Image 1: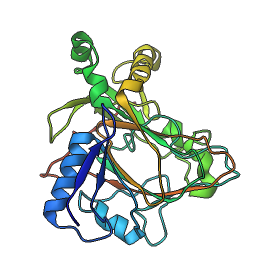
Image 2 (image 1 turned 135 degrees about the vertical axis):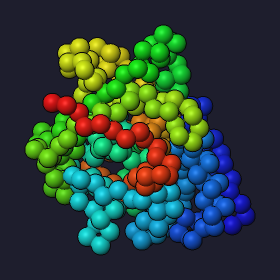
Image 3 (image 1 turned 90 degrees about the horizontal axis):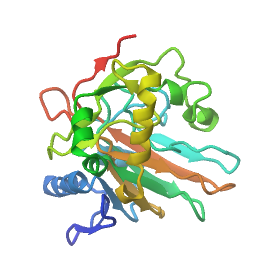
Length: 292
């Protein structure tokens, strides 16, 4: 390895890293450089990586313990690894629509690492949006108001029988969330534990309302934030290539898997990094169980 090279890809977020083979056991110093790029750019990309599930798990664990998804079964021998597949006959895709992974958990994940296994001939890009830049673009008065609010997050809407992700039940072993879903409260504005930078932490897939507000009262402000947060100026777009890897910070980034490749197959593998155990850097303040 001649050394890590970093190329910024957009103004708000995103950088492509080269000069590293993620299948190898990397020295701590290089992992520290990758982590710094991840923190600074919010989403980082690698090309031409040949990762087995074991190697993807090993790389992910250098950044924290790995999550086992509560509603999507992982690989039989690697429960931490999700197989994200859209078959040619599928009309819906997994991850379509703007969202932040796992915000519906009591302690959400800090990052997701997605590896391209099989790609369509065209289409299938992923969009990313910086929620830190989105927060900074608001007026000081609105930022001050949002700083005081909490929001309720739940998997019910996405993983219920009629939910977008639940429609992938057959090809991705998605388990219906009805009756098993909790509601958890998280701050509307998160302060990043490693940079001190603030970012909005609401998303259309999993945020249902503000704490203490009804859904009807919450809707106008949430709708405004959801529209604001996907503004073009806050985004970058990644065109996948075979073996490419994307690693994004769920604490400050939304993403959207585009469903624009009808009749073609797309196969990705994802591992999701959880916060470090208690008494270490906990990226997301411990959530409160939402009251009924």
